[in-house]
Length: 211
Image (cartoon, rainbow, N blue to C red):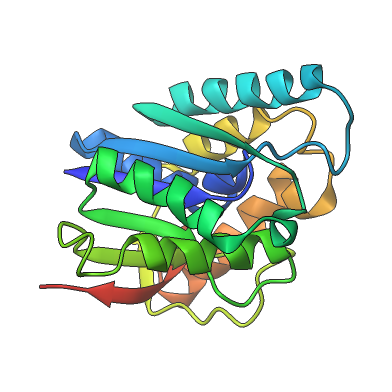
């Protein structure tokens, strides 16, 4: 099975669904990541910062068993300055190349505008008339940014929490932030696990599923 994670910035894939990625990889699924923004220019200047963030992503990908990253260069925290059609086309091209059965993307209600735009463009790229191979779309949460996500789907990541946290630790420029710290992400996983009586879990909202 082919799985596609669509995210705004490098590290969103680990924070939002690193445990699910590890679980998919263990099952033998092929997991691909589409990163829409370079993810650093809002904080750091220069091409070296972009290279560093991508190298961190690739190290995290090795931990989780990701098959391939598709990196794009839209500016960090400025996706609202880009015509929506351009973002749609980038995501659409990856969707058509990978032809995933399951797609993970951002939840629609988020304090980060980049996340909201990627959510909207994902739904355009995955509309049934254009991507009939997509059988399920799941929306993930980014701690400290996503608002009002009440999960209706949980993935038990008890056996995968260590890989999720190891992958997150590879983003060395990011884990110092409170909302992206190892402690915060582990606490959220424990909270979601408590909701469904497992030790650690990730919570998702199902947007569409074809049975």
